[in-house]
Image 1 (cartoon, rainbow, N blue to C red):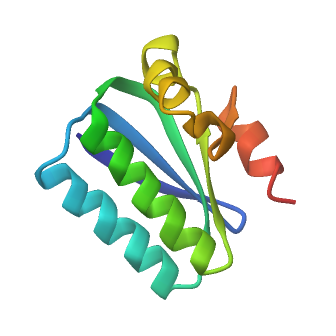
Image 2 (image 1 turned 180 degrees about the vertical axis):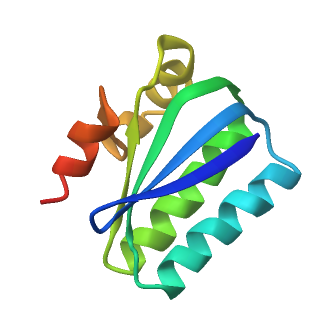
Length: 112
């Protein structure tokens, strides 16, 4: 999995690419979120447009980041989920926890 970072105003956008399967990529994502919190950037959008697959470890990675950001006064929002990625979130009833948007732009605007 690759992580690309960009700022849109005060919101950090993390574009993920590849598979969210756990392992080493979780460390990179976790460090990116921890660094954002250290820099007091606590509003994050995760762009899932280029994610091909996610298992329970990948879902756990997102939950962990959401928890850390919310306890720091921020939030994590998901953008561009396809049906294959949305399904595990719905099955686990996490769709009531994660806020999902059709585009990065709409997710970023929702912070204002």
